[in-house]
Image (cartoon, rainbow, N blue to C red; front, side, top):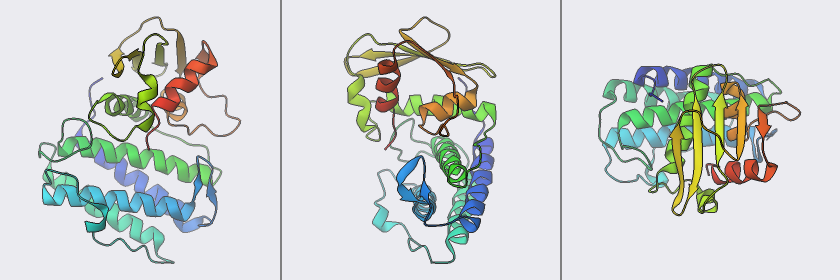
Length: 254
């Protein structure tokens, strides 16, 4: 799949940050997040606010190696000002990435190591956590179909990068057989996942597999990220359930 534009990713990150901030401002901060049961809504706000600040610091420094979280400024989220703190981090980082443009060479934990990679990453990090906010408030998750399909592609690309340390379940996928096909029905998006000795490989296009997941881009995205609302039908699943769980566990982002 072709990536979306740098500005499209940043527009999406900014919009989803605003929606998550609205959830933080209006919701019960002590409420558990259904899709991340170890977190409360306040924890979710802190995590997303820190991710924005961390990425902003990496880009601002033009860092060639990982920036420790302890060196990120403005790490204290004030009680009663959680939503404003979250938005301040989002606004700074989105503006910085927009002014920097897509071609800055900079450290990244997977992918090509550019500001464009970080723009894509922050768009999808914010999309998934905005969905977490929606689920916490009992709202049905929504996403643009093209962006949802790109979310699937981005997750698979990063998980398949052998240099990535963000997917601790990846070693479960090492082996052979047990292929999985993902298929979006409303926008272009098909992926063939195959186990390999070093992890797994991804191919684009239609192919027969041992198991398959087929549905709208939103449903495939929610399923892959473990964000389907309780009781929601989700995408169609074909093949053995153990294969669906094998792949979803192996592709879970820490």
